[in-house]
Length: 252
Ligand SMILES: [Zn+2]
Ligand SMILES: [Zn+2]
Image (cartoon, rainbow, N blue to C red; front, side, top):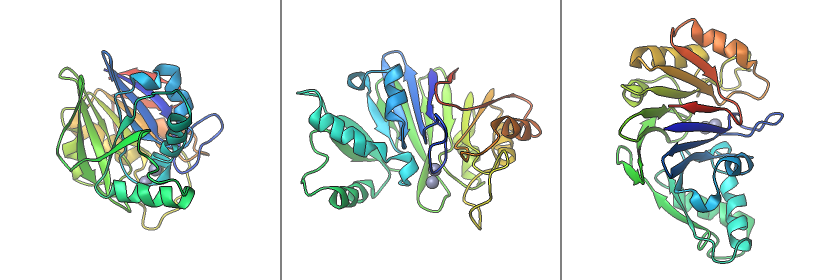
């Protein structure tokens, strides 16, 4: 299983760096986790849109889904006969995207023909070709779902956005690679009170408890010092620690 980073910023893109988006691939199956601002460009360096099996959205903050709007316009006005792409949203996600559509356009239906919208349920696995994606609810300002991705050989756990919580232990247990948000790392401002995110230290504690081989930190504030974030995590986790960045690829 391969993990390609399409973007790794929180809230807004940084210089040359998109918001949240990750491509997970096993064999011919390619699934995009999150579709934040600026991720569609990097995505197409790895896979054609025609070969993308599905997009799974962790939660309904715009830095995790707003490029669905761009994708809808591209599919609608682009290649004739382009197939509709399956998008799996959290509970309530279809109504949310219909409200977004209503604010943007008088065209109804807005999404049909470009994207096929589905909603997943917590704990109910999505069978997507060679990959199985299981949403695990975590704790954030709104409902948020970490994803456990399995290709029967390797397991990737992705935290989504979350505070430290017991659910993260279940999400990461037995995973080989943990892709963890570290918004409060590398000198980032503590802009929420109470915090709704993880520090590098928090992410490292989850990695150590789960015994993962590799921790990949992501969802950095755009001004964060990523090398410092890696050093912060390495204080609490003795395994391999990496900072995500657009274009970086990892073997899960
Ligand atoms: Zn976010
Ligand atoms: Zn969020």
